[in-house]
Length: 320
Image (cartoon, rainbow, N blue to C red; front, side, top):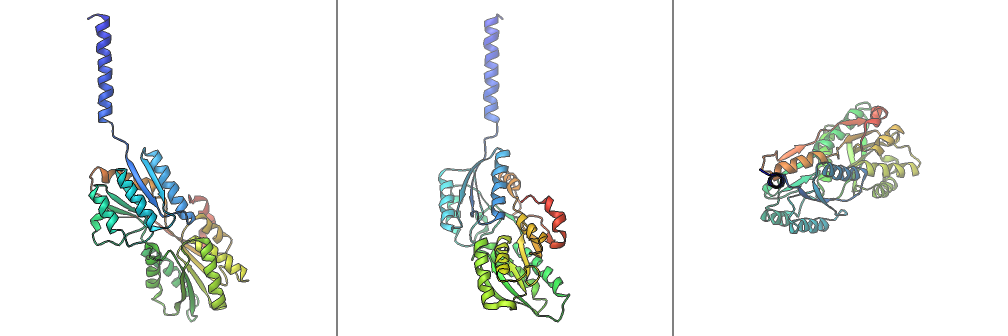
């Protein structure tokens, strides 16, 4: 075999190898993700986790911010369907009103993964799985902590004001339910006012101001469905000349750094963790779903409860 033929044969083998590699290489996964918005520290951490995980895992992420509006999420999901993405994931603004668009995704043979929040649909097969926290249990944990606290003064009545999350959202519904289930064990614990603060710091402050004007020193406990509303409410309590964490016990949910800072300052008494770092888990589940593997219908994240007493020690370990 002469040099020319040998060179041609070698080139052909290289070309064949490259072509084979291209044929057998796994195609990049394309995910459409619709986020609720950027209403809190928790949500910001959740978004960052998803974007970083997609980048490190080689997933092409088409990201849409719904700005807390369901109609924006529906538009985003329809856009993902039109773009023929491999998988759709989203954190629903509210629980209901998803049947039509999810059926459209199924008709297009695009699997859907729910993250952080659940949906209320008649056909559970419209989504592949739900990754996120057990919001009812989070509410129960907040309630159980308050029950333990109330045991120190067994004869005292405890008047609670509640800052609810976005009306109709899964965490608002479930955290209220779980909390009420827990405190039912002690009839002296009563919710005297309950109103939405829409999961935002500004709205939490505004609603707490209204609670203080109408109830004054009658308030013993603030239960907030997230840390951001609690932090806003703490500002209102201070401006009213009261000491948050002392004059009014403050109980909240999420476990963000801002809550730990408030606990270290003695202004917040306990936060129940809700882990936003779902990105890595989401990417793995997405690959499994697209590959046709069987995945659990419900994947619950592991979380804890952090009272003020452990805040200083735990703070350096917080990643969000």
